[in-house]
Length: 313
Image (tube, rainbow, N blue to C red; front, side, top):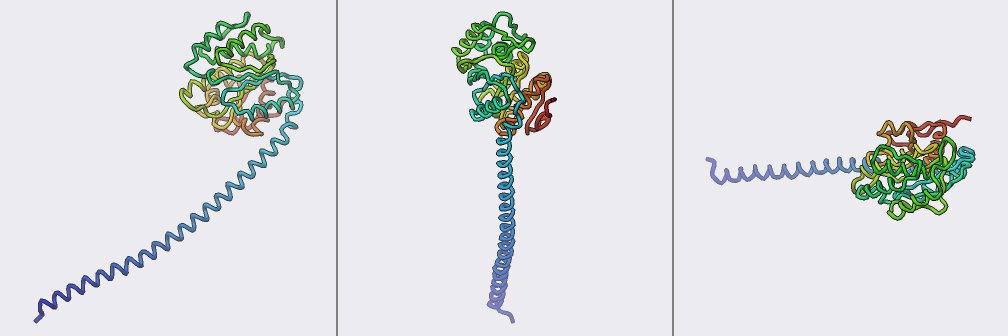
């Protein structure tokens, strides 16, 4: 007869066997799992190393390309704008390095820089829009007519365009020296511009801006710069609006221009002026403006081409 003690020993033996099975099974599973994880980790390390090598290789090629463009840039634009005149207009966020590089290329092209005008941060500030519009209407030179559109960028362009660009019809100044000095003084006193000494009107203009606009009211700020540049273009023989990375997206002035079919029909834009190649393209686009042509150039998704074609000989 089987005793109670036998039953207890049998039950204990079953539980002991189960416990040993769980321990042995989990140990085997852990080894298998760890082995698999180790293998996956090794694969990831190799992939990361390969990607880093590719990135380093691409960065090296970009440096080589930038170096090449910087070296041949002055040669590529030589004679492109021979005996022409160019005025440089910069926004508050434009990089001084871009300005200096473009100025050097303008000189290498055979053109003369007649001066520089910097638009301050207040120029595109929506809170100062009414003050800017008031100055534009009060200090308008005699014989110059403001556009019917009344946004601050267009009105400011309607004032500054004739001051900074000579007439493409007769290559003569569109305002007297006294009228120009009074308007620039009013804009300077209002905190909207800073004009370099000796600024004179030119045939062509380059408006240099930065990348995507940051801060508050980015849409209004971008629109003000975009409409200003477009109106300046209407005042002379040609204008190019050039910006850096991000300037052609929805928060940048170039993006506003490129979304406006009427603006793109007259104003050329370059979205990579922060690179040596983009600066050369800016000069090519400026030359194209003399032939009353325009385009959207650079590397952004809304660019039509990397650069304009060669000018006619």
